Image (tube, rainbow, N blue to C red; front, side, top):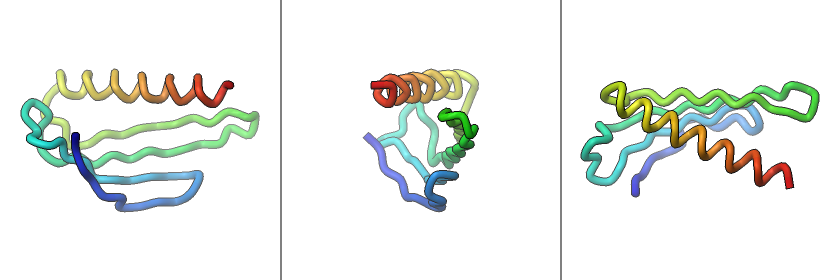
Length: 80
């Protein structure tokens, strides 16, 4: 598990939040996550996730895979 706080919320445009894994062994310390949404005007939205505070390349790769999986699951859900 983990915890965090929203730092900025602009509905439909941007979310910024802090995140710290419980115990954070192997995950580093506190992170800052920025999620930006760009409505393409054709029924699709581009989502850009920036995850700051990761400690090394392996952690970055692990988080990239996690975000990609989460967004793919969201896309499948919304396609129903």
